[in-house]
Length: 134
Image (cartoon, rainbow, N blue to C red; front, side, top):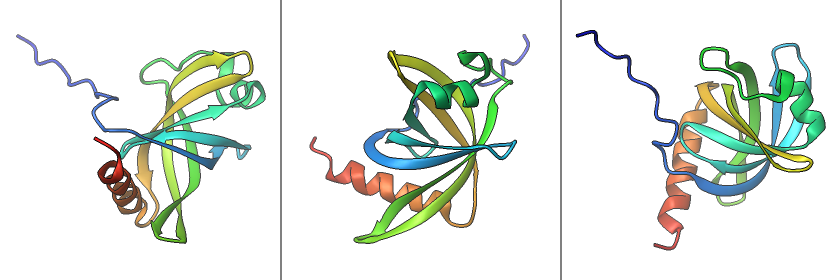
């Protein structure tokens, strides 16, 4: 029997709803500003309009596994009260869907972080999860 490669479970991390701006940069240097709708330790879900989708996702179709679209995201998270830090994370667009006439969701899975980016996100998500009503 051949071993089966494990498929990444994109839903294995708890997500928390947030509303903050994110700057998305493609490998060609073009940039777009969208809104983060939720965040987990492994990625973000963003909301964007038709113009951003046309530029970020060729053909406006969810990328096939292995053909992910590489991007760099830059956004802020509050590490301690009133002191946001900037997180820069390289990642891949792994999901896309239309949710309204001019509104789309894009799922970006993180691949690597600059500096302490992962620790900042981990602490932020943990804080939000612990303060969420059960």
